[in-house]
Length: 325
Figure (cartoon, helix red, strand yellow):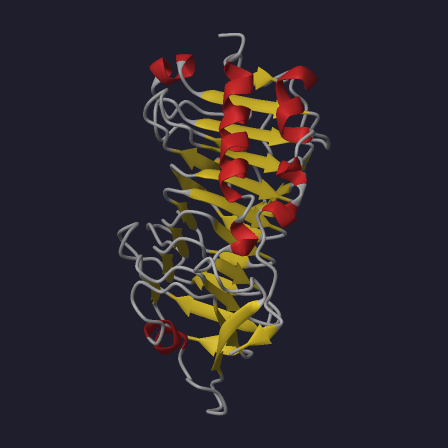
């Protein structure tokens, strides 16, 4: 299985090649900096006072870029971006002042404050939170579309904060907080320069990746991230038997437990889960006491990730439009 380390990174290369034209997304004839503008303003000075009303105004089978600008405020809404409404950008001005909040719990598909089912979606400068609290599944954000980007967002809850469900996703400069399995799902996702913070009071889990088959090109890669916590936390545990997670060039505070990973009480998953670390630093990054079935990756194994345009966010990121119709 010597090449397995490269295999997880090659799936991200395929992901990248599929997304290199993401900034050109649209109907194929429209300039990428041209978009329809919809303004959401709780004071009543925009097109709508509620975000969901703005989303609902986008036609089914949408083929044009739509930029929904959300003015500062706290929006107590349960948002759904339907699968037949691609090419939407939802943008606040600052995550600290543009807050979408809910408090549902109990089901990972029913509780999310925000559910993105559409492809070619961009979320910018938003706080997305579920304030239910401890003791139940309470998702803040569900992402089930393909080619989805979140930039400079705050995503917070406790258990099951981010349902990174299916599709190819890029999270850049985001803050993600929770305590139990709070980044989970079966997407192929790159987290770049994100701050991952555990609020577990002891023995929490950051990731629960759900890859169920060796044929699935899914997994989570954390590149240049910061990992912190209140007390101590595991980097992850395998929700699916072939769970795959890599941390590369990331800072790990002392909140990261020395063993790093947990097998979720099923030792058979130790043979199939793929958990790796490359050139991380900080008091929690010491690999000498990691579980023996995790991997310390070599430069050769990670070079496909670190020497391609994967680290260039412009390959993924649709810039804000400058012309509106």
